[in-house]
Image (cartoon, rainbow, N blue to C red; front, side, top):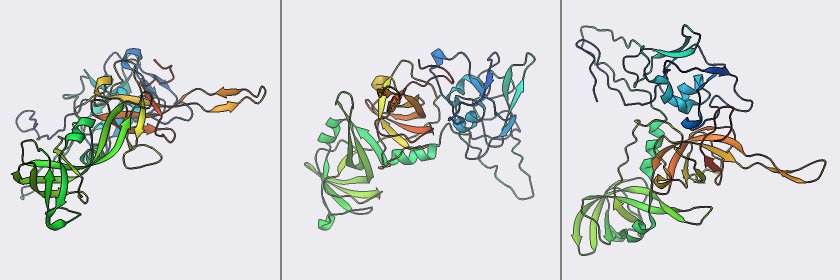
Length: 378
C-alpha cells in the first residue's frame, strides 16, 4: 500500500480510510446549537432522509489532528451527525488525496463566496531534520474511523458460530500426562473428525443468543482460549500441541478452524439501507452498565442487511408515570440514548461499538436506524 507522489517527495504508509472530514462543494450547512441534554454527537438519519448535514454552533475554526484521534471524534467537533462524514470529503479541490488524514493535519472551517460554510484541510509538513547520520522517516499512520486496536483485541477473544457447527466440533478429551488443565507448550488429545489443516483454534462455549421477540436461536458465542497445532492423527483421536493460550484449556473445550480476524478501516459509516429494528443482546465480558466504547452483541446480522460501518441508534422505552391530575398511567415517548457502529457481522448476529451514549444503555434496549439532528424518525 505504499504510495509515491513523484520523485523526491516523502514516502507515505497510509491505512486506507474512506472517511475524511472534507466538505463537498455545493453542500449547504446550517449552524444550530446542540440540543439540550445531548453531546456533540447529536442524532442521525438514513441518507435517504437527510437534506444536508448540520454544523455544530460551537464548531472550532481550526483543529489540529492529534495522535489517538478517530475520524468519528474529529467529525463530532464540527458536525451534529458525525457518521455523515463520507458525504463531506469527496471532490474537495484543496486535497490531493481526500482518502487520507493524518496526525498533524489541520482541519479548518471557512466560508466560500456565497457564505456557505466549508471544511478544508491543510496537510501537516512532517519535516525530518537531516544530519550526517542516516535516519529513517517515521511511519505515518492515517486516522482510523474508530478505535481499531480495541476492536481487534475484542475479536481475538470472541466469535459466534451457528448451532450446528458447535455440535459437530471436535473436543478435548484429555491433557498430556493426565493433566486437567493445559496451557502453551502442553499436548492435548482431541476426539472428533478434524478438517484438513495443521492449526486450529481452541474455544469454550459461552452465551447462547436467542431473539427476544421470536425465541429463534441466533448463534452461540465462543470464548477464545488459544491455538494448537496437529502432531499426529489416529482414527478419531488427534494429538496436538498448544502453541498459544489466553487462558487454561480443559477437557470438553472445542476445536474449530481459526477465524480470519483482520479489522479493515476501509468501511464507510452509513445508516441501514432499509428500516430495521433489533435489540442489544448482551455485553460480552459481563459489564452491567453499557457506555461509550463498550462492545455489544445485536440480534441483527447479514440477513438483515448489516455490514461493517452500519450506524444504529439505541432507543430506550419511555417510562410509565402517573398523571398527577387524572391518576391515569401514561407512557412517555421513547428516547434515543446512543449511537452504535457495527464492525463484525455474522449471519444472524453482529458486534457493534458504542460510539456515543447520553445515558447508561442496557441489554434489551432497542436499536433502529438513526434519526436526523432535530428531526423525526424515518
